[in-house]
Image (cartoon, rainbow, N blue to C red):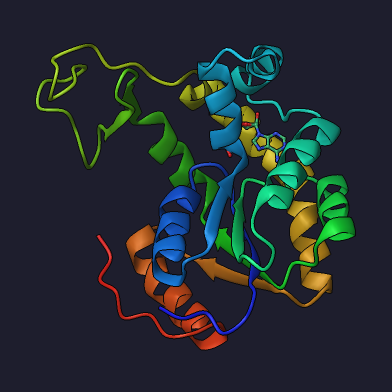
Length: 224
Ligand code: AMP
């Protein structure tokens, strides 16, 4: 894979729209550095850092953490990358204020928007169960554990992530609608937004890949 220029990309879409899967395919295919705000926050919670402890209740309740806090973290991460590296932001920006903070430092050239119906997402997220020690994830509809409620490898119990519980999912989708959808408008007006609509990641992906290949480079790697 060869990138012919520096890429500053953002992936957007409601929680559970497949951003994580699509991001890892994009980074594998095009060699961008993946920066996920949710992963950074969860790593802080797991490591029990001061920031993690402060932000945990916000995240567990499906609320957004304050703009200045997350903007500072992400901009610092971007600064620490090698000059000239290409990156893909996932989960940030989530508000217009965050998008403006990002713009002050870097201009984004590509925004991939995953447009997945809320009904599909609700079904997807609330049927997701996790084995916390390993991070293994099951879906009761299409990837169920062999024994309901228990991890295939260790036999330990599975739990539903606090932010995957039905009432929290509804709150996260509402936050997306009110706070994040205006960011789509922000990028649309800058002419960098590309929207992909569908209910299945594997069906949306070939369109994204073709679009990015055309925009960036060629990619011949096989994806898992
Ligand atoms: P995610 O895994 O991207 O859905 O993020 C999990 C949670 O982290 C979200 O529900 C928010 O509470 C918080 N979070 C992640 N990114 C941001 C952001 N850019 N702005 C505010 N809160 C965020």
